[in-house]
Length: 269
Image (cartoon, rainbow, N blue to C red; front, side, top):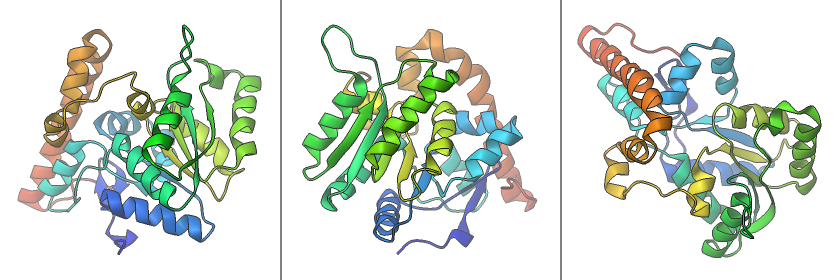
């Protein structure tokens, strides 16, 4: 049974739903059966850090229907503060579990994002959709789109991309454009697709397509998936992970511990 929304757990200014991965899937499928769409956000430390400095962006995320903890430090912070989040629920896992659930119900997905086509190889969105359909018999692929970088800054290209999704009327849209670009696009699409669910899933489309390898399961379970990505992309990620995200995560955990010891509020949402 789905836990009550009144038990949402505040972490770093955002209310997190204390749901397991199967509960998220069950909630989405039930809502689809009732003709209700929605939006899932999967905040991690980097996302919380960004929204902590941007009230408009924080308000944007608060408009989502479900928020689940993609980052292990969020789970640790909640537990240190004496509030329970059952587990990390990563977008890179949800794209698979949601697809299995949607397949069993004979529903459809639209995949948006991924690497562009090159040297006769299909683009990442198409390859990700094909792999999901192959692994999840019964899943219908409503469509795919791999827009060029910067398309969302061009009104005409953005309108064309939105039209491509809306015309297919999918049950679920996986948007892998990175935060916050994917969230802005989802917010625009929701008005035209009130019965569709959306998942902003970042690099998950690249993972499914096979263009980027995920960390080994042991690192995922230990909350060290970021370390694997840092080792493979140090020039791009060192500043973000080490100089920005690590101090923010330490402060987040410290506030939670202070709350545990003093009972003073650690996090608000």
